[in-house]
Length: 237
Image (cartoon, rainbow, N blue to C red):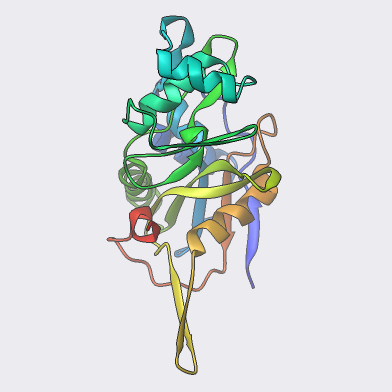
């Protein structure tokens, strides 16, 4: 049986810190039980905040391309559109997808995310995703093993939307310890599921969106073989 449980009372991250240390400290304080092969899902906002990945929008000067794109999607701050372009590392805007009120972008690691993973925190501050979420997931897993002697997989999740549906869900943007794909065979056909996104979406049932303050969720009972070479890139086209 699979169970999903959130870690409560995790401190609010406001500045650079060692996230692994903070997670382990809270796990100990809350007597939060971890077992080998549990999957720990962590909201990307924690990763970004602990790494200090804030953008001062007052320092952003939108390009002429950005101003033209803003006419297509006027609800988006043009400075934010510029940051989105910068995150795709394509100054020509060819890695963007814009449709009605939607803007998405392809990141250098091959992931496609709403707003290219850029989140506006207030009128003049934005936050971006780390470039190395797989490596960060590995470091957190190893820290937990070193301190608690429990081997857990880590999935870093981010809020993401779709053009054809309202609202958002959670998807995996980094992982360690568990394959991003699950394969099975029926008769002569191989079926492939993006298990990392399924688990991220399941964690989202408790995580919710901004303001709920349940950024870390444990999934227990998942049947998988722990592996040290799995990355989210394996699940990207």
